[in-house]
Image (tube, rainbow, N blue to C red; front, side, top):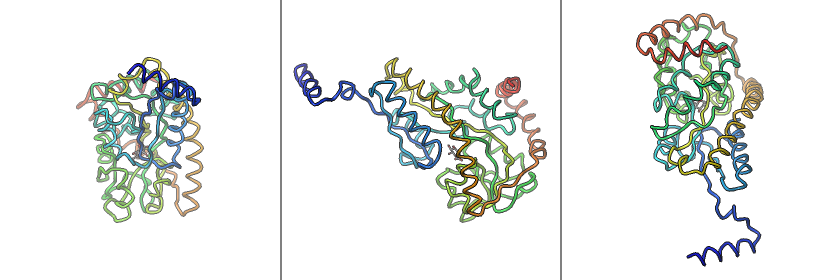
Length: 324
Ligand code: GCU
Protein backbone atom coordinates (compact mmCIF):
# COMPACT_ATOMS: atom_id res chain seq x y z
CA UNK A 1 0.00 0.00 0.00
CA UNK A 2 2.82 2.33 1.03
CA UNK A 3 4.67 1.50 -2.16
CA UNK A 4 1.55 2.13 -4.19
CA UNK A 5 1.02 5.62 -2.62
CA UNK A 6 4.66 6.44 -3.16
CA UNK A 7 4.33 5.50 -6.82
CA UNK A 8 1.24 7.69 -7.17
CA UNK A 9 3.09 10.63 -5.62
CA UNK A 10 6.15 10.13 -7.79
CA UNK A 11 3.99 9.88 -10.93
CA UNK A 12 2.07 12.97 -9.91
CA UNK A 13 5.25 14.96 -9.41
CA UNK A 14 6.50 13.69 -12.76
CA UNK A 15 3.27 14.95 -14.31
CA UNK A 16 3.77 18.33 -12.72
CA UNK A 17 0.95 18.03 -10.21
CA UNK A 18 1.50 19.36 -6.74
CA UNK A 19 0.94 17.23 -3.68
CA UNK A 20 -1.82 19.61 -2.63
CA UNK A 21 -3.90 18.65 -5.63
CA UNK A 22 -3.74 15.03 -4.58
CA UNK A 23 -4.77 15.83 -1.04
CA UNK A 24 -7.41 18.43 -1.86
CA UNK A 25 -10.94 18.31 -0.48
CA UNK A 26 -13.92 19.89 -2.24
CA UNK A 27 -16.82 21.14 -0.15
CA UNK A 28 -20.23 21.67 -1.80
CA UNK A 29 -22.10 24.89 -1.08
CA UNK A 30 -25.83 25.27 -1.86
CA UNK A 31 -27.86 28.46 -2.26
CA UNK A 32 -31.19 29.43 -3.74
CA UNK A 33 -30.39 32.55 -5.79
CA UNK A 34 -29.36 32.70 -9.44
CA UNK A 35 -25.93 33.54 -10.82
CA UNK A 36 -26.78 37.22 -11.33
CA UNK A 37 -27.52 37.72 -7.61
CA UNK A 38 -24.74 39.46 -5.62
CA UNK A 39 -24.67 36.65 -3.08
CA UNK A 40 -23.49 34.27 -5.80
CA UNK A 41 -20.55 36.56 -6.55
CA UNK A 42 -19.69 36.89 -2.84
CA UNK A 43 -19.73 33.10 -2.41
CA UNK A 44 -17.60 32.53 -5.53
CA UNK A 45 -15.15 35.07 -4.13
CA UNK A 46 -15.08 33.17 -0.86
CA UNK A 47 -14.42 29.90 -2.71
CA UNK A 48 -11.43 31.47 -4.48
CA UNK A 49 -10.04 32.91 -1.28
CA UNK A 50 -10.38 29.58 0.57
CA UNK A 51 -8.49 27.83 -2.20
CA UNK A 52 -5.75 30.48 -2.20
CA UNK A 53 -5.39 30.53 1.58
CA UNK A 54 -5.00 26.75 1.75
CA UNK A 55 -2.72 26.43 -1.32
CA UNK A 56 -5.42 24.47 -3.11
CA UNK A 57 -5.94 22.03 -0.24
CA UNK A 58 -9.53 23.10 0.39
CA UNK A 59 -11.89 23.92 -2.46
CA UNK A 60 -15.51 25.01 -2.51
CA UNK A 61 -17.94 24.34 -5.34
CA UNK A 62 -20.93 26.70 -5.36
CA UNK A 63 -24.29 25.33 -6.56
CA UNK A 64 -26.82 28.16 -7.20
CA UNK A 65 -30.56 28.06 -8.10
CA UNK A 66 -31.51 25.60 -5.34
CA UNK A 67 -29.98 22.83 -7.50
CA UNK A 68 -29.21 20.90 -4.32
CA UNK A 69 -32.62 21.61 -2.79
CA UNK A 70 -34.56 24.48 -1.24
CA UNK A 71 -33.05 26.41 1.64
CA UNK A 72 -34.80 24.15 4.11
CA UNK A 73 -33.78 20.94 2.34
CA UNK A 74 -30.17 22.13 2.09
CA UNK A 75 -30.08 22.90 5.78
CA UNK A 76 -31.38 19.45 6.64
CA UNK A 77 -28.58 17.93 4.53
CA UNK A 78 -26.06 20.16 6.31
CA UNK A 79 -27.34 18.97 9.69
CA UNK A 80 -26.75 15.36 8.65
CA UNK A 81 -23.30 16.13 7.25
CA UNK A 82 -24.46 15.09 3.74
CA UNK A 83 -23.78 18.62 2.49
CA UNK A 84 -20.91 20.79 3.77
CA UNK A 85 -22.13 24.36 3.32
CA UNK A 86 -25.34 26.28 2.70
CA UNK A 87 -26.25 29.92 2.37
CA UNK A 88 -29.44 30.51 4.30
CA UNK A 89 -30.87 33.53 6.07
CA UNK A 90 -31.89 34.47 9.59
CA UNK A 91 -35.60 33.99 8.82
CA UNK A 92 -35.18 30.41 7.64
CA UNK A 93 -32.76 29.68 10.49
CA UNK A 94 -35.12 30.84 13.23
CA UNK A 95 -36.94 27.48 13.06
CA UNK A 96 -33.60 25.66 13.55
CA UNK A 97 -32.04 27.92 16.17
CA UNK A 98 -34.23 30.38 18.04
CA UNK A 99 -31.71 33.20 18.65
CA UNK A 100 -31.77 34.02 14.91
CA UNK A 101 -35.35 35.21 15.53
CA UNK A 102 -34.20 38.65 16.74
CA UNK A 103 -33.16 39.58 13.19
CA UNK A 104 -36.78 39.11 12.10
CA UNK A 105 -38.13 41.76 14.45
CA UNK A 106 -39.37 44.85 12.60
CA UNK A 107 -37.61 48.22 12.95
CA UNK A 108 -35.05 46.86 15.41
CA UNK A 109 -32.12 48.59 13.71
CA UNK A 110 -31.86 52.39 13.42
CA UNK A 111 -29.57 52.33 10.43
CA UNK A 112 -27.39 50.14 8.27
CA UNK A 113 -24.41 50.95 10.54
CA UNK A 114 -26.36 49.76 13.58
CA UNK A 115 -27.24 46.51 11.76
CA UNK A 116 -23.57 45.92 10.82
CA UNK A 117 -22.38 46.68 14.35
CA UNK A 118 -24.79 44.19 15.87
CA UNK A 119 -23.65 41.43 13.53
CA UNK A 120 -20.00 42.13 14.43
CA UNK A 121 -20.72 42.39 18.16
CA UNK A 122 -20.59 39.46 20.62
CA UNK A 123 -24.41 39.24 20.28
CA UNK A 124 -24.14 38.60 16.54
CA UNK A 125 -21.17 36.27 16.91
CA UNK A 126 -22.88 34.24 19.67
CA UNK A 127 -25.89 33.76 17.43
CA UNK A 128 -23.60 32.24 14.77
CA UNK A 129 -22.38 29.75 17.38
CA UNK A 130 -25.84 29.05 18.81
CA UNK A 131 -26.68 26.11 16.55
CA UNK A 132 -23.74 23.72 17.05
CA UNK A 133 -25.94 21.23 18.92
CA UNK A 134 -28.37 21.34 16.01
CA UNK A 135 -25.67 20.22 13.61
CA UNK A 136 -24.39 23.43 12.03
CA UNK A 137 -22.36 26.57 12.74
CA UNK A 138 -22.72 30.05 11.24
CA UNK A 139 -19.52 31.08 9.46
CA UNK A 140 -20.46 34.57 8.35
CA UNK A 141 -23.25 37.06 7.78
CA UNK A 142 -23.82 38.41 4.30
CA UNK A 143 -25.63 41.72 3.89
CA UNK A 144 -29.12 41.31 2.44
CA UNK A 145 -30.35 44.91 2.80
CA UNK A 146 -33.83 45.80 3.99
CA UNK A 147 -37.06 43.98 3.19
CA UNK A 148 -40.22 45.76 2.03
CA UNK A 149 -43.69 44.75 0.83
CA UNK A 150 -44.64 44.35 -2.83
CA UNK A 151 -47.95 43.67 -4.52
CA UNK A 152 -50.18 45.04 -7.28
CA UNK A 153 -50.89 48.33 -5.40
CA UNK A 154 -48.91 50.73 -3.19
CA UNK A 155 -48.73 49.77 0.51
CA UNK A 156 -48.46 53.14 2.23
CA UNK A 157 -49.80 52.26 5.66
CA UNK A 158 -50.54 48.97 7.46
CA UNK A 159 -54.24 49.50 6.57
CA UNK A 160 -53.30 48.73 2.93
CA UNK A 161 -52.31 45.20 3.97
CA UNK A 162 -55.74 44.40 5.37
CA UNK A 163 -57.22 41.28 3.77
CA UNK A 164 -54.06 40.54 1.78
CA UNK A 165 -52.42 37.13 1.84
CA UNK A 166 -48.78 38.02 2.38
CA UNK A 167 -46.09 35.41 1.70
CA UNK A 168 -43.53 35.21 4.48
CA UNK A 169 -40.57 32.95 5.11
CA UNK A 170 -41.11 30.11 7.58
CA UNK A 171 -40.15 32.30 10.54
CA UNK A 172 -42.51 32.54 13.54
CA UNK A 173 -41.44 36.17 14.04
CA UNK A 174 -42.18 37.10 10.42
CA UNK A 175 -45.61 35.46 10.68
CA UNK A 176 -46.33 37.41 13.85
CA UNK A 177 -45.13 40.69 12.33
CA UNK A 178 -47.52 40.45 9.38
CA UNK A 179 -50.37 39.70 11.82
CA UNK A 180 -49.54 42.84 13.81
CA UNK A 181 -49.48 44.83 10.57
CA UNK A 182 -52.96 43.58 9.65
CA UNK A 183 -52.17 41.15 6.77
CA UNK A 184 -52.70 37.38 6.53
CA UNK A 185 -49.26 35.71 6.71
CA UNK A 186 -48.71 32.71 4.43
CA UNK A 187 -45.38 30.85 4.81
CA UNK A 188 -44.08 29.51 1.51
CA UNK A 189 -40.71 28.42 0.07
CA UNK A 190 -38.94 31.01 -2.08
CA UNK A 191 -38.96 28.78 -5.15
CA UNK A 192 -42.76 28.55 -5.12
CA UNK A 193 -43.38 32.25 -4.80
CA UNK A 194 -43.32 33.41 -8.43
CA UNK A 195 -46.14 31.03 -9.40
CA UNK A 196 -48.04 31.72 -6.17
CA UNK A 197 -48.04 35.46 -6.92
CA UNK A 198 -48.92 34.91 -10.56
CA UNK A 199 -51.84 32.61 -9.77
CA UNK A 200 -53.12 34.64 -6.84
CA UNK A 201 -52.37 31.96 -4.23
CA UNK A 202 -50.85 34.90 -2.35
CA UNK A 203 -51.47 38.62 -3.00
CA UNK A 204 -48.24 40.11 -1.72
CA UNK A 205 -44.71 39.30 -0.61
CA UNK A 206 -41.78 41.06 1.02
CA UNK A 207 -38.10 41.01 0.16
CA UNK A 208 -35.08 43.12 -0.69
CA UNK A 209 -34.71 44.83 -4.08
CA UNK A 210 -32.19 42.48 -5.77
CA UNK A 211 -34.27 39.42 -4.89
CA UNK A 212 -37.50 41.15 -6.03
CA UNK A 213 -36.05 41.87 -9.47
CA UNK A 214 -33.77 38.88 -10.04
CA UNK A 215 -36.41 36.33 -9.03
CA UNK A 216 -38.71 38.12 -11.53
CA UNK A 217 -41.35 38.76 -8.85
CA UNK A 218 -41.28 42.28 -10.30
CA UNK A 219 -43.08 40.90 -13.38
CA UNK A 220 -46.10 39.96 -11.31
CA UNK A 221 -46.04 42.55 -8.46
CA UNK A 222 -45.57 46.02 -9.87
CA UNK A 223 -45.49 48.14 -6.70
CA UNK A 224 -42.53 47.91 -4.32
CA UNK A 225 -43.30 50.02 -1.23
CA UNK A 226 -40.17 51.10 0.63
CA UNK A 227 -41.40 50.52 4.20
CA UNK A 228 -38.13 48.64 5.00
CA UNK A 229 -39.63 46.74 7.92
CA UNK A 230 -36.74 44.34 8.55
CA UNK A 231 -33.02 43.85 7.88
CA UNK A 232 -32.57 40.09 7.73
CA UNK A 233 -29.00 38.97 7.00
CA UNK A 234 -28.07 36.01 4.87
CA UNK A 235 -25.98 33.49 6.79
CA UNK A 236 -23.40 31.05 5.51
CA UNK A 237 -23.50 27.88 7.58
CA UNK A 238 -21.28 24.81 7.73
CA UNK A 239 -22.15 21.32 8.89
CA UNK A 240 -20.76 20.76 12.41
CA UNK A 241 -19.61 17.28 11.32
CA UNK A 242 -17.67 18.71 8.37
CA UNK A 243 -16.24 21.53 10.48
CA UNK A 244 -14.96 19.10 13.12
CA UNK A 245 -13.28 17.03 10.39
CA UNK A 246 -11.21 19.98 9.09
CA UNK A 247 -7.69 20.72 10.28
CA UNK A 248 -7.11 23.80 12.40
CA UNK A 249 -5.46 25.51 9.44
CA UNK A 250 -8.39 24.75 7.17
CA UNK A 251 -10.84 26.07 9.75
CA UNK A 252 -8.81 29.26 10.07
CA UNK A 253 -8.62 29.76 6.31
CA UNK A 254 -12.34 29.12 5.86
CA UNK A 255 -13.23 31.59 8.62
CA UNK A 256 -10.93 34.22 7.12
CA UNK A 257 -12.35 33.72 3.63
CA UNK A 258 -15.88 33.97 5.06
CA UNK A 259 -15.01 37.21 6.87
CA UNK A 260 -13.58 38.66 3.68
CA UNK A 261 -16.78 37.68 1.87
CA UNK A 262 -18.81 39.60 4.49
CA UNK A 263 -16.86 42.78 3.69
CA UNK A 264 -16.98 42.22 -0.06
CA UNK A 265 -20.74 41.66 0.08
CA UNK A 266 -21.35 45.09 1.64
CA UNK A 267 -20.04 46.79 -1.50
CA UNK A 268 -21.63 44.29 -3.87
CA UNK A 269 -24.95 44.86 -2.16
CA UNK A 270 -25.10 48.63 -2.67
CA UNK A 271 -24.20 48.26 -6.35
CA UNK A 272 -26.75 45.52 -6.90
CA UNK A 273 -29.54 47.41 -5.13
CA UNK A 274 -29.02 50.41 -7.43
CA UNK A 275 -28.74 48.30 -10.55
CA UNK A 276 -31.76 46.09 -9.85
CA UNK A 277 -33.92 49.02 -8.86
CA UNK A 278 -33.17 50.70 -12.23
CA UNK A 279 -33.80 47.47 -14.04
CA UNK A 280 -37.19 46.95 -12.33
CA UNK A 281 -38.22 50.55 -13.16
CA UNK A 282 -37.34 49.99 -16.82
CA UNK A 283 -39.58 46.95 -16.80
CA UNK A 284 -42.52 48.93 -15.41
CA UNK A 285 -42.23 48.67 -11.61
CA UNK A 286 -42.91 51.61 -9.30
CA UNK A 287 -40.96 52.17 -6.07
CA UNK A 288 -43.21 53.89 -3.55
CA UNK A 289 -41.71 56.13 -0.81
CA UNK A 290 -43.41 55.35 2.50
CA UNK A 291 -43.83 57.25 5.77
CA UNK A 292 -42.69 54.48 8.13
CA UNK A 293 -44.26 55.92 11.28
CA UNK A 294 -47.59 54.09 10.97
CA UNK A 295 -45.76 50.79 10.46
CA UNK A 296 -43.51 51.46 13.45
CA UNK A 297 -46.50 52.31 15.63
CA UNK A 298 -48.32 49.13 14.61
CA UNK A 299 -45.50 46.90 15.85
CA UNK A 300 -45.00 48.52 19.28
CA UNK A 301 -47.46 46.02 20.82
CA UNK A 302 -45.44 43.22 19.22
CA UNK A 303 -42.46 44.19 21.40
CA UNK A 304 -44.72 44.49 24.45
CA UNK A 305 -45.96 40.97 23.80
CA UNK A 306 -42.38 39.71 23.36
CA UNK A 307 -41.36 41.21 26.69
CA UNK A 308 -44.10 39.20 28.42
CA UNK A 309 -43.94 35.93 26.49
CA UNK A 310 -40.21 35.64 25.77
CA UNK A 311 -38.13 37.69 28.25
CA UNK A 312 -34.86 36.04 27.11
CA UNK A 313 -35.22 37.27 23.54
CA UNK A 314 -36.43 40.63 24.83
CA UNK A 315 -33.17 40.95 26.78
CA UNK A 316 -31.25 40.57 23.52
CA UNK A 317 -33.45 43.27 22.02
CA UNK A 318 -32.50 45.60 24.86
CA UNK A 319 -28.81 44.82 24.35
CA UNK A 320 -29.16 45.52 20.62
CA UNK A 321 -30.85 48.86 21.34
CA UNK A 322 -27.89 49.85 23.51
CA UNK A 323 -25.47 49.41 20.59
CA UNK A 324 -25.40 52.60 18.56
C1 GCU B 1 -33.86 36.66 0.53
C2 GCU B 1 -32.79 35.80 1.13
C3 GCU B 1 -32.98 34.34 0.80
C4 GCU B 1 -34.39 33.90 1.09
C5 GCU B 1 -35.39 34.82 0.42
C6 GCU B 1 -36.84 34.46 0.76
O1 GCU B 1 -33.69 36.75 -0.84
O2 GCU B 1 -31.54 36.24 0.72
O3 GCU B 1 -32.08 33.61 1.56
O4 GCU B 1 -34.63 32.60 0.67
O5 GCU B 1 -35.14 36.15 0.82
O6 GCU B 1 -37.64 35.36 0.90
O7 GCU B 1 -37.15 33.27 0.88
